[in-house]
Image 1 (cartoon, rainbow, N blue to C red):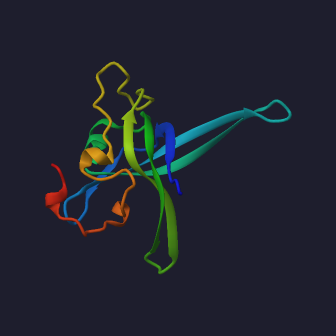
Image 2: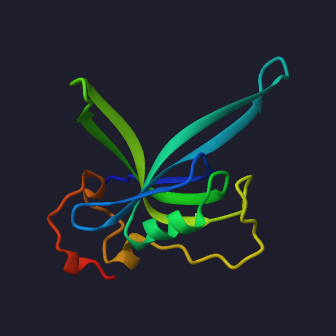
Amino acid sequence: MALNKAMIIGNLGRDPELRYTQSGTPVANFSVATNRKWKDKSGQLQEQTEWHRIVVFGRQAETCEKYLKKGRQAYIEGRLQTRDWEDRDGNKRSTTEIVADTVQFLSGGSGGGGGGFSEPPPYTDEDMGGSASGGSESNFDQSFDDDDIPF
């Protein structure tokens, strides 16, 4: 048995960037910061920030682009995926990102919004007609037809 699941709560480091695959599937990318605080042996408060790259597909990507802004807090649940590519100079590069199955909007954070309005419901891959176990969406697999997308 194997399990690949990531769950984080953090604040957006930038507004989501919405693009579309060649077949027209919406894809949103953004970053989320998580913080950890602790006291070291001398009693000094320490803080560590981790940055996470997030990728969201389908109608959920459009919803994220519309409602999420820099500083807004969100709960992200998905799977870890590493992608490899060559940059313009021919150097091999890689990145690890969370391909989100669920994005739930939380408090407003410094970017605004606040909790004073009704949030749109969280969407999952299953709402999009996919499966939570995923495929190779962030590799922009074009093996599906636009007719398979439920919107």
